[in-house]
Image (cartoon, rainbow, N blue to C red):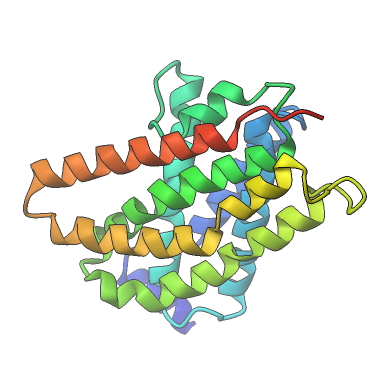
Length: 234
C-alpha cells in the first residue's frame, strides 16, 4: 500500500515498467530471431523483466524514482525503433545497429554489444536528466537508484555469456571476437553515463552548450558502435 501511495504522490503509472515490457515483447515476436536489433531486444527485455521483478520484491528503496529512470531509459530505445519504422533517422548512436542488422558477417554478440553501447553510452545519461526533470530533483538524489538499476544492467554481461558467447572450443585467444569483447566494458560505459548526466545537468542553463554536448556524445557513441559491428571472418 505504501508503494501505491508513493506512486500517487508522484503521479506515476503503477504499471509503467510493465508497459515497457509488453512493448519489447511485441517487438521480439515481430522480428526474425537473427535480426540484429532483435538480438539486442531479447537481452534488454530480460533485464527489464528483472527490474520489474525487483520492483515488485521491494528491492528499490525509492520505487517511483527507479521506475521513472527505467521508463525514461527504455523510451529512448523504443523511440529509435519507432523512428526507423517511420523512415526517420534515429540518433547517430543507434544507426549502425539498424544499418547492419541483417549483415551476415556480423555475429549475434556484436549486435548485442552495439545495442548496449548505444543505450548505455548515450541514452542512459539523457534518461537520468529526463528523470530529474520529471521528478524535480538533482542527479545526486537519483544516484542510489541509478546504482541499483546498474546492478541489474551488469547482468547483461552474464546474459551475453550464457546466450551469445561461442563455446570455449570456438572462442580462441586469436579470435577477433575475443579482442572485441575485451575492448568494451559495460561498467566503464555506465560510469561514463553517470559523468555525462552530471555534466548535462550542470549545462541545463546553457542550452546551446548542452545541445552540442549531446550531439558530440551521440556521434562518439555511434562511431564506437560502427566499430563493434565490423564484420568478422568465420
